Image (tube, rainbow, N blue to C red; front, side, top):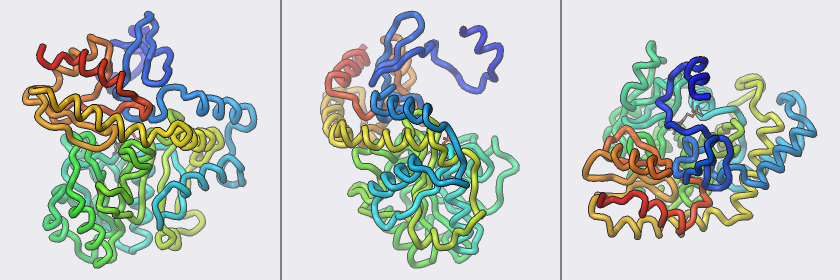
Length: 384
Ligand SMILES: Cc1ncc(COP(=O)(O)O)c(C=O)c1O
């Protein structure tokens, strides 16, 4: 299997030596009978855990009804997903545009901001990651990514995350949008003070700029709230646009832009489009994902288990700090986190690294419990 995959698939990812065959909750089962505790969720996708029965049933049922029809027709699956998503979004977010991935959501968010303002420039932040298509990669000021997208889309400006003065200096009347990951995940799970988000909101209001939160990672419950938008950690700020993907469909590819009525009023027929966005299978997965999070009280679970994990790590001398919120956590070590990552993998626990070599990233399913945390801390053998 490994030989075949290596022979026929482009080697664009450094893979773990795991052949994932089956999943259940926080567990991944391999073809040779092993099981792994998954604290990475396949790039933060397995929010409801692997194969949540409610999500699986909804997908099975929808697959037998109608797999797909495009936005040229109405659909009860789409109507339900849109209504459910908007019902949990902080006001004044009022409408959704469905697409298929995080990068596509961000491309459309930036396009809407340009349409709404009649301006072209976009401010994003050093350390932010927004995807790999042309506009999103040009907005990504993290490591080598932007270089990979040469020639870049013009009009992208780089500010310093957490430094409002650096934003003010760039935010003139040619700027359409300020876009940020409210918690920068790949940069090593970096979060700013609430005052920073509040100052961004004020600046955008003063200068007629659209504020976009890329919540591709932080959205859909990962922080212990449905969204970072509107949360206390973010000073209660609600942006004009929120982009989502990753865990929104529990593994069925789907993205979304949530927008205010004010933004929506600038978007007309044929301004945006996508063949697969809003397809029935993905929509059934979205509704079931949100219902599963609600039914299993996963937001409360995230907050409780986060507190427990922080408490357990407080005892550990090698842990310098724990960054982030909810189940988007960066454990900062005094030394290279790759050693811990490797040790954990040998002990059958999957974690993530980041572009900060000292930070180990955890993006587990929202159903992770205290017992799983105990297993993780024991296996990490921080003193070993
Ligand atoms: C914050 C953020 N935005 C956007 C993206 C791009 O999402 P996708 O890979 O679905 O295009 C990612 C992917 O890792 C991400 O972490």
